[in-house]
Amino acid sequence: MTSLVRAVNVEKRFGALHVLKGVNLEVKKGEVVCLVGPSGSGKSTFLRCVNQLEDIDAGLIWIADEPVGFERRGQSLHELSPADAARRRSRIGMVFQHFNLFKHMTVLENLTLAPRIVLRENEAAYLPRARALLEQVGLAEKANSYPAQLSGGQQQRVAIARALCVQPQLMLFDEPTSALDPELVGDVLAVMRDLAQTGMTMIVVTHEIGFARDVADRVAYFHDGQILEIGAARDVIGAPQHERTKSFLASVR
Amino acid sequence: MTLTTPIPVDEQPFDIRRRRHLGRWISGTIVLGLLALLAYSAATNPRFEWESIGGYLFAPAILNGVIVTLQLTFISMAIGIALGVILAIMRLSPNPVLSWSSAGFVGFFRGTPLLVQLIFWYNLSALYPVISFGIPGVALNANELITPFLAAILGLSLNQAAYMSEIVRAGIISVDRGQREAATAMGLTGGQTMRKVILPQAMRVIIPPTGNELVGMLKATALVSVIAVADLLYSAQIIYARNFDVIPLLIAVSIWYVVLTTILSIGQEFLERHYSRGTVFATASRSGLVRRMFATGRIARLDEGEQR
Ligand SMILES: Nc1ncnc2c1ncn2[C@@H]1O[C@H](COP(=O)(O)OP(=O)(O)OP(=O)(O)O)[C@@H](O)[C@H]1O
Ligand SMILES: [Mg+2]
Image (cartoon, rainbow over all chains, first blue to last red; front, side):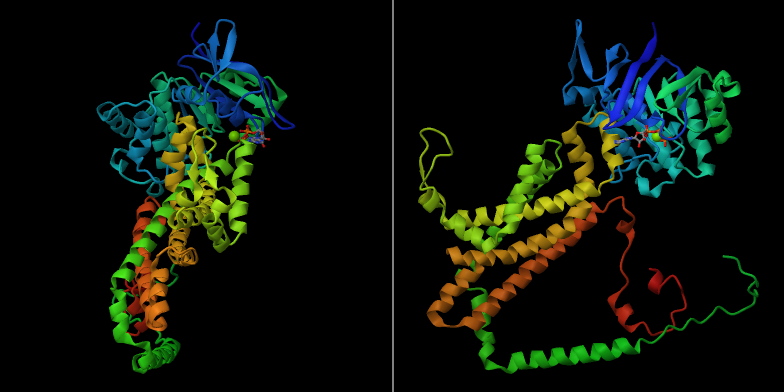
């Protein structure tokens, strides 16, 4: 079995608010899965649970056959220490809607922070990699700029390079182009497209239906804390089965 | 903006004439006149005893007082900042015991006058004649342990910690939530996130009020004269208790306070510049004082003046 991510009956509550009501999702190694759905349906929350930015209330998420937040010993699951949980997160890259670059650090410092203090690599290992990644996202000459000196699209490409700099096995994107001016969206999507070509496993929350159709292997339609419909991108987008999926897709087109 | 009528190519460049700031000249003249009167009266009133002030400025006892004042300021401030950071992090912790005890500490030390706290620490031996720290076999004489200097440090630093914790907390809260989220997502631990990501950015908000606190601390150390610590003020008091040269000594002391606070303010400016890296303000500079006052000429180039 080559499934990298396996979410089983994931539930999440914020107080009285039942946000995830049993999400089931399997993502194979090298697969690109797009999550679409109306605002408030729980897409971001689910993504944050995968990276244990939120603890889940029921169900389990497995990544590379390890349960998120736990260590498996025989038939029992032991909650991870904060330090171990942090180490697990470093194997997953995450890209946010608002970039969240560290404002007091240069672009290069943003990229090398985690390799330096989380992975404890030495400079000879991470510096060439960071520079190569900046080259790859087309921003090699911005290495010494501060985030405030970059456009939104450039910042998001730096954020992608930063997430890749820890050499993650999985990349999570939460509406990476929603905060961008329309003319800057293309550059960021192009970088993500290239990344998908390299065989990276990606879960992408997006409203870019065109991107989902062209790049995703599968598309999942989120509704009210559950996955209502999932299938090959062409099928879900081209011929949705559910009424709700149809009306949602009609509304974002 | 679009121009409806194109500017003729052969037109002369405009000669821009700035307004003459008549009001500024009048108010400036009045204030300067008052200052001159004040200076004249100070210079001609023999009771200022300017010659003896010069002597007191560098008297050994006064210089010693300057050193004690600086020691009190920097030691208390260092402890106050360190403790303040801890208190702020406790206050923001999800653990209610930590959060509430921090709030209680701040409430207590902000709620009582510093002078009372100083006298309290000075008299601690009345409350605990023997201090054992709860360790069997340890029995320290409180009277010997709590010297006036230590009582001063305790009072000043604990009080400062309460104020610093509020300043640090405001700084931490000012950092966008996404910064912590990104740091956590890439595998930084809570402590690493705080040290590498949150606090360096909070500094921009923390430093200006901390600079004020440091200047305030320097002046607040004068309170320790009531518990007989030979700081700058107390050293002067000892001298004028003998020779009744009150005014010249107080002026000498004031000159020292002004010099020291000025030096601290300059240091603050450098720190602020350092921690504003990556912000838009980092590159902004101010326009000249002289130009603001006397901008009268025909400044023809718009890239000068206000635009700078
Ligand atoms: N930390 C939180 N505390 C309380 N409620 C939350 C929290 N985070 C999210 N929610 C709520 O959970 C629900 C799902 O939010 P979520 O961000 O997952 O939606 P989404 O599908 O990503 O929507 P969008 O497309 O607008 O980003 C919303 O009602 C939101 O208000
Ligand atoms: Mg969202």
